Structures are given as structure tokens and as C-alpha cells.
Picture 1: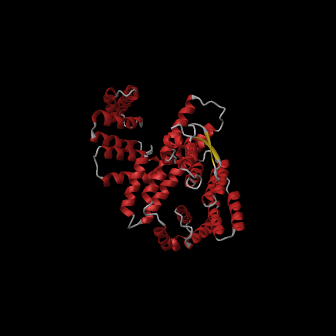
Picture 2: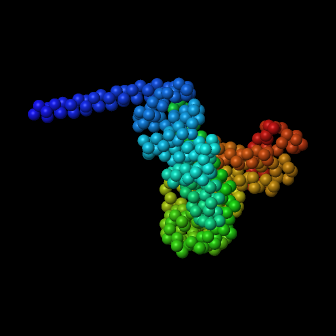
Picture 3: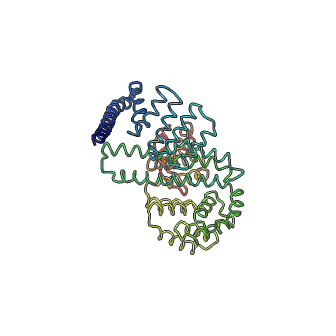
Amino acid sequence: MKKITFLLAISLFIVSAKTNAQDDLKRECTIKYNLFKPDFLSKNYTAAYDNWIYLMDNCKDLSVNIYKYGATIAEKVRKDPALAKRVYDQRLQYFPKNNPAKVHSDYATYLSKNKLASEDEIFLLLEKAYKISPKDMSVKNIYKYFQGITDRYKDTNPQRVFDTYDDVVESVGEKLDDYAAKITKLTKDSTRTLDAKEKRRLRAYSINSKALGQVEGGLDNIISGIATCERLVPLYQRDYEANKTNSVWLRRAVSRMFNKGCQEDPLYETLAKSYADVTQSADAFNFVAGVMERNGDKVGAADMRKKAFDLETDPIKKARLKLREAQGTKNKSRARALAYEALKYNPNMGKAYLFIAGLYGKSANSCGKSEFEKRMVFVAALNKALKAQRLDPGSGASRFIRSYRKNLPDSKLIFTAGVDRGSSYTIKCWINETVRVPKG
């Protein structure tokens, strides 16, 4: 009995000592973390280093900030690839659900910037990030991953290239819609003054939206060489039978053919009608309406568009339906009117303003006699593109703004035309819009 009592006492002592040791470690971890964090936030990385290493060794699951901040310290203080890899590995081990796509993407950036891995090794990291969440990758890495997919599969498996493009654009589009809704909520009441916290949020939403908005245009530049009607039609003809009830495949196929101007091919009509049969959706009916109009059934097309529009309840999607109708309309004045109708449902729809800007830009030669008059059309186009960027940072307006600015009338043209800089000027023909003469 005495022996049992003695052993029990020893066990309790060991448990108590272990508990005390654990409590001591937790206290020490908290102290070290509270010393480390302010040093890091004040960018005193050297002072933060020793406490950070202690946390890495002894407090691995205390806070994800050990790794978020540690990646910067590893690069700026020691520039040690082994230490950077340890940060990457430990973060994934102890915080596997905390934005892993960004972790893979950031580590790929580190390896690429410091030339510490081959292109294939970096591509595999980007592939991991992409499979988890494309929208959480950096814009540069989305491009790099997509370029890798294109280089590897454009000849052997172009469908994989198109699928990757669609996955990325749809994922990014969801994030852009989310940012757009948040921006609209903060800005819809122009009489209300935002507090400091709201201003920070608005700035963050705008910056992130603008960065994501560059994705679609950049990917289009990469894919444009292979996404031609000559390549798309035989590809979709080959795969149609196997996918004629696959709503996702049909939506992507008909959307790509629409966006690439392949509507004249009979396959487009087949795809649109199959998409409508399978989904009975507003989106599909809108495509069918376009087919009916091209076939001369204007009354039927109008009824079908109304059916699609009435079926849709989301105002953002209603705006998209109107804009797509505008994009399929040859009459520029009517197309502009439809784009403005889209803006009634989504006032911050930058792509609607960019569409109008594009209509103006394409009319430069026909809406002016002199060089000055033609170039003034680009002033109107620029104004719309600037408005798109201001209201919808994710619209991808930057490249349009650069293009239109290059075509504005210069000082010599303004002088020769005999007009004052900054004065009002009315662009005639169908545009009929008053703008300001550039100040030079």
C-alpha cells in the first residue's frame, strides 16, 4: 500500500511539474510575442529577430503572425533560403487553413525573385496555389501560372488552356463582384462622410479590385493567339456530343464564341440552344435572343430578351444582360442607350462605361473632318474610361486610359484649330457630347 501511495505521489509530482513547465512556456511565449510584434510593426527587423527565432523554435502554433511577419524578417535580415523555407513549411504545418493559396504564391514569388528554383519548381508551387484559390494568388503569379499552362498545353490540349482561363476569370469575377458591392455600399450615399475606418476599407477594396481587374485583360493577351474561331469551332465540334448536357461546358463554350466573334458559325446557334435547353436560365435565353435576331426574328428576339431579363432577379446580373445586348447591337446609338440601361441596374459598372468609350473610339474617323475634330472624340472616350476607373477600379480601365491619352489632340493641333485650351467643345454626329479641350 505504501508503495502504491509513493508511486501515485511521484506521478502527481511529474504531472504537476509538467503542467508548471507548460504554463511557464506559455507565459514566456506571450512575453516574447509581445516584444517581437511591436518591433516588427515599427520595421525594426533586427531587434525583432531573436524573439522571432524563439517563437519559431518554441511557440510554433501561437499565432500565424509568426509566419506572416517572419517571411519578411527572413528575407530582410538574414536572406537565408533555408530559413525562408522553414517559415513556409512551418506555417503550412501549424496553420494549414490560413490562406494556403497565398502562402504557396508568396513562396513562389520569393524563389523566383531570388533565383532559388527552376521554372518547373515554381510552376508546381503556383499550381498548388491555383488549385486551392486562384483569386488569392498575386496578379503577377496568375499570369505566370497561366503562361505556364499555355506554353505546356496550347498545342496538345488547348481545352485545358481554355478551362484554366475560365476558372481564373470566373473566380476573379466573383471576388470583383464582392468588392464592387462593398464599394457601392460605402459610396452610394454621397452626402455621408466616411469615418477613418471606412476610408481605409474603401481604399483597400479599390486597390485590390484594381489589381484583380488587370487579370482578364492580361490573360486575354496571352490566350488571344490560340482562342480564334478557326481553333474554337473544330474543338467544340469534337467535344459537343460528350458535353451537350454539361451546363458549365456549354456556358463557357458559347460565351467564348460570343466574345471572340464566332456567332456566324452554325455551331454557335447549336451551343446557345443546348445551353438554354439544359439550364433554362436567363443567361442562356439571352444568347438565344441574339441568335434569333441574327436569323431575322426581331420580335421573337425581343420577347426572348424580356423573358431572360424578367427571369433574372440580381441587379448586377440584369446589368450584364443589358450590356451583352449592347455588345451584340450594331447601331452605335442604340448600343450606347442599352449600356446606359445597364448602368441603371449597376451604377458602378465600369465595363459599361468602357464599352461606351470603345464605341466613341471606333467613331473617331467618322465623327470628325479635321485631325483636331477626330482626336477630340478620344477626349470623350477618355472621360468615360476615367469614370470607369473611378467607379469600378476592377474594370481594367487603365490600358484603355493609356490608349486614349495617346490620341488626344496635342498643343499644335489645338492652336491650329483656333480654340482655347479648357474651353467647351461639342462633338457632333451620333455622339453629340460636350467635352473640354485638353489644356495641353
